[in-house]
Every structure is written in C-alpha cells, then in structure tokens.
Length: 94
Image 1: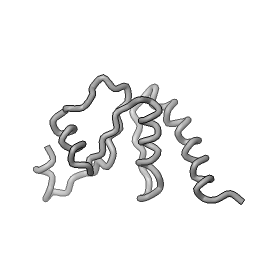
Image 2: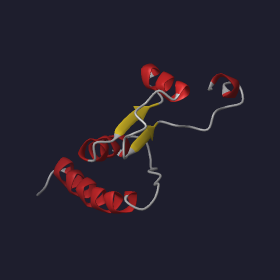
Image 3: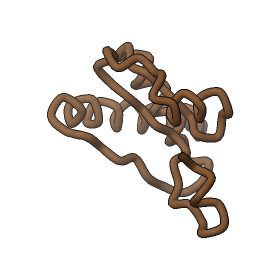
C-alpha cells in the first residue's frame, strides 16, 4: 500500500506536466483548498523552468512587486498568495 505522500507526489508530477504544457501558451491560475500543495507545486515548476517566484505574504517579495523591481527577463513569473483586498486594506496595497 502506498503512503499518501507518495500518492500526492504522483499527482503533483501529473499536474506539473499539464501545467508546463499550458504555460507555453497562456497564463494559468492555480487555485484550490488550503494546504493542498499549490505553493509547493508552483515553486517546483518555477525552479524547473528557471522562473521568478514571488510571494505576497513575504514582505521583501511584496516590496519587489510593489516597486516593480523583479527580473523582467524571466520567462516565467509566479505570484503566490495574491488575494482580493478587503476594503479596510485596499488603499495600502500599492
């Protein structure tokens, strides 16, 4: 019997194949429930494709996004943890 971890690894590899194929043609949005592996999968694809990974929840990454100071020569950009702002925080984003 396979462990859940091994099974999840196969699912991620299966999804990564399709995501990489789609990324060659279009922008994709990866969505799903909390703690299902979206960020891990995004990081793995970004690394394998020599892309730029930025996470809004990391202050230094957020500053790079806000100031447009990231590597624009990258062939792949991943912006993780982007959310629709609440009215109380919307004027503090950019």
